[in-house]
Length: 224
Image (cartoon, rainbow, N blue to C red; front, top):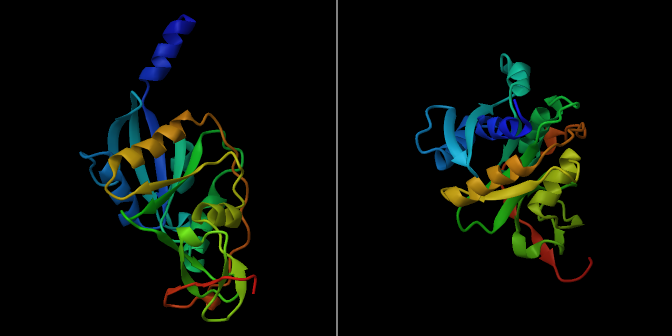
């Protein structure tokens, strides 16, 4: 086979992308947005003139049979995330830490939002109270209504990357529910990413600090 024919064969080959997430419903919603004819947890579509097979793998890796083997069969991995409260992060971290450190296939984190959503959910770094943080308040000083501790408000992607200790080379991309173009754009970025390195995350956060109700973080005008 000539080099040109080999390149054509590579371009014609189907790419298998594995979508990892906490809840099956989240993965299936993303799948339906990208693959209109998706069935269950599997779908096929064209992205940037490449045939792509999407498989959704949800839940705790420790409770999922053949989880490790499924990971090895994927050409690329997308970690699909919705909320960043302390319990959600603990589950996301469990998935991320299970990925083999020697992986050379592409990986991206995909932040899933509702249309028109201008804030995201995280937990207070001091007491674990769940908080809503608006995008327009990123970089400002905020105060937790529960413990009154002040901290600098992070971006959603920045907070996630810091919590997982993601390498800079792993992109964090935001998509919108029901917007096929944004979801396909994230997949196109993943396909364009040639290689990545997975590193271990931090230790799990104590779940006992979780507060059940999510409240709006208090924004401070001064340093406080």
